[in-house]
Image: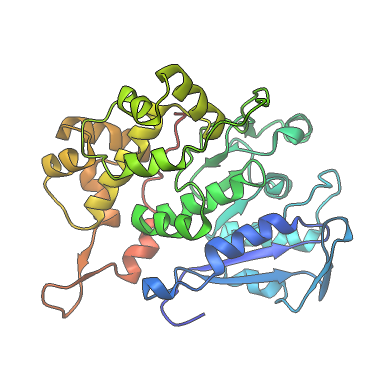
Length: 350
């Protein structure tokens, strides 16, 4: 990785690991970002063996670093395997324990919560895992506070995601936590993926398959995102889509797993965050431009969505003067590193 990517993310690949979550981690943390002028992370893969057989023998992975690479991780993504009943290798668990002991951040995608729990690091703590394995997880690790219906859980230095696609949700949440909403939105656009699905959102929404699929909400969402500062209402969205509010509500639930009002509020909060990051200090201006109305509402919404007040958010993610540069701004490496160590943003249900 080029110079300037100081935070090292290491993913441990184990026998029978899922390739999808590995690819999600590469997409979020490993790709170069020349359009940003810097790379966000120093990313590496490592494995206990020179050749690792991936899930169901689809392919064999080779040419990656040995487990010693994990000893230098600032964030360690632990192995996730569908054979959750098979004990993890002792040397893999030891690597996870040592990483946690030295203060590294641990991340488990899908069944990765089993690895962290088997290492003895989740007792008394919150965690998420795929709903298929919730019963088995509770049986094996009764001391863990499993939250089976959420997309992911951010418990500070240990973060777990429930299923395959939620690996992207948690990955983008980490980018947002480390680098702010503006950068996370950029990464999500390259992924063509929702920038922010709340961690407290349900893993799945039970619904019948319609005889005729609903039209995509994409054009409506793009239209609304350009008008967040206007007094848009759910009725306005329904009128734009030429449907009733009830039909619009059903489409949002079906396609996004949330309500029109919750989506609109989350987008406005995300815009407010970007304005603060860009240096706008007047809360009434941020509130007006983001469509949140008043500074009081901005404070309440921002704290609900991120766990931070506007001033705290500005200190963590706002632009700071560049050393030796008149009038210029940049986020220093120290601020980027500190971003993941301050108050933990909460992920309430929408």
